Length: 184
Length: 215
Image (tube, rainbow over all chains, first blue to last red; front, side, top):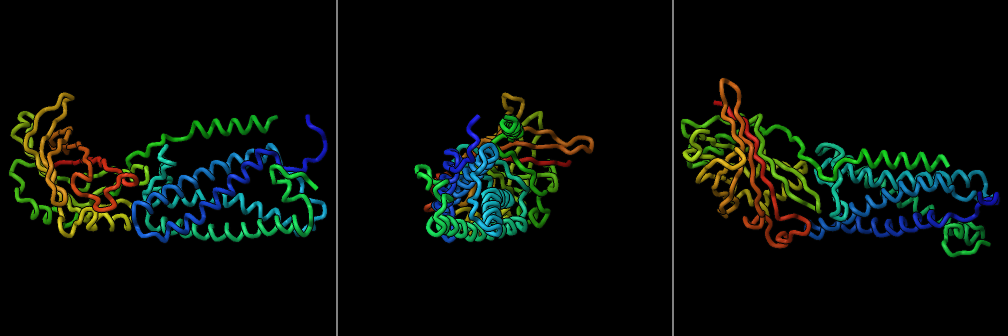
């Protein structure tokens, strides 16, 4: 087996998952905001279709990513971090993982409840998870929206923490996720 | 490493339990028995002939399957009437008529239903009913029947061919009429202006009729 040195960087595949999902989310969230404000048109339907396809893609990547994280755990947090900081990091990361699953699932459920089966890039169609139910649809839509706000806030915390680690604490937290960076 | 084994097992399990990509027809609520009959009857210039079977509305469905955002979905019409006047021994003397109240469309999403009855789609306020009427009925090669006829939808009347299976009611047992046909919505002007694009709302629409009949 490999050396007993503690790992200090994220595995390349873990980095790949992180950045691909990040890029998809940076597209997905503004797309959602844009499309819900569009008047009904074929273009709007196309944007919904794209949003759903990307959502299911993120869902799949998140599942693979979580499995891979189990096989290749994240590097340990810097020793300089205070206990409350470790707790904050754990909660934030846990919440981000939770949202990576909860967002696509509520989206898929919401579409199902309105009898809008989800097609993934017109390649295949997912089955409806629940029978049509207008009240349920409204609730799921609201849940999806509230989760989106939660995602936005959690993402902001995640980003600020990464920058804080890099520029103020001058540790390796951000560098450990950058593919070509050398550690300090 | 056993973690690999567990994950591959889970992945295999997920692959096995993955249902078919196609969503099947879902059973909708039974059609609402309302003033449909009277209303539809008023719309039908040919009243039911004495030999026609009675439609058991609670057990009859009229559904359609269309494509939106690349995915098939099924909707239904809650109010419709049918005149099935058919003798299995001499189908060529028979008549099949169907009348649909277009504003009774139900797709599981009231917003979508609202758009469908609007001007760009059914324009139900102007053309409230669609009507199928057979012109000639013959036996099909597969043991079923073939009705050559016409469909009027909005202000367009076009020939359509409906294939169906038919069992007349007998000794108190209800009869059945199961059939359907496919249309291209744009042939009937369903979807005007920018909705003539078929990229996100498909052109093909499958109509499925499943009727229960009493003597």
